[in-house]
Image 1 (cartoon, rainbow, N blue to C red):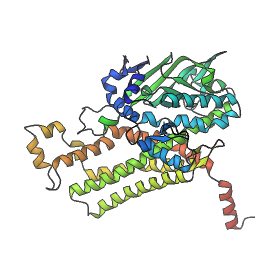
Image 2: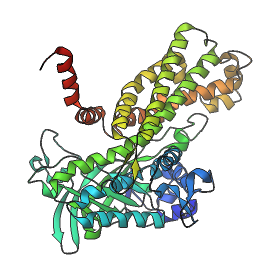
Image 3: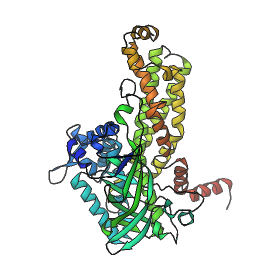
Length: 464
């Protein structure tokens, strides 16, 4: 297992990164990446919470739980606890487990595909590597398929097949923390049909492979104060466009090549592990929102007002519902033919839809409880300032039981995660991560037993 220092050193591998139009020579020495690197490197502190981060295998050797293949509900529960503690850099390991879930499916068309997935898993486990799921193509004109686009590169595709591998070209967008991982797992973005064989591809590649360029977008707060931005200055990550410019992929890293009938199934397999991670995040944020709402009410002396209790209770219902969904998805687990246990996909899809479609309403309740001061609260510099400190102590006072500094810190937290830097990221990713609301509707509609529902109606109506 790597140490935090070894993880940082592992990123100095010649990867081609850009930020604000300029080449990043060394990501570990780049100030804009400092917070993200600190956040990711903490995942490699295996002595912190070892009961969750490690497990003992059958030989009595301590192993990284991140790579433990769950074979029973206890393993799955431990894995879920682990994922809720990790940065997106380690959380994206779900892409590897999505592949593991798909081994039997892929082996039906090519036994080598399953063997190659096992090889990738072993490489990542033995070297403690982090991966990113790389799925979303630019897509161009959404009304047209890959072959009908003005530019064929708007969907990732094979441009050359060789004896030793394939050459691919295209781009993948919206990849969180792509610059901070070691391996990309590239999957199709959608179903493919006959004639689109060159677009039905899945493979893995090192991030530093020749021809890969990563364009980073950093969501940065205007100051580095953790007083003013308590979350954004501890937990932000780059969002990335990944360009594949004639990238060579050896055959032993290819998991799908031309089998159009499997492209959609493989694309859909990713969502399971990504959505369970998203569900964990939503459940955690929901509990935070409930506590935030109550503390706002307490600090402002309105905790007994009926409309306040109503808003706080609605957020509690939201938080409890997500927790019930989460526990149900783990309890109603499924098992692959190889014995790998995974969460119930149907429950996760419904939970993701419920959580994402109601999140903005919960934020509205928080803002309603805040008032305008959530945006106008002065900064830490004002509070510490010799000329302004006394004014803020006087006019931000509510009761002697509530220190002004505590009140400011609470409002800064609210603003940061609901109305500012981190908040904007959360509002969008809650909807889009793991697929938008339409994707959950489609999956849930397809998975519903409509035949038995129709039969119930016929029986109730006396229709023979």
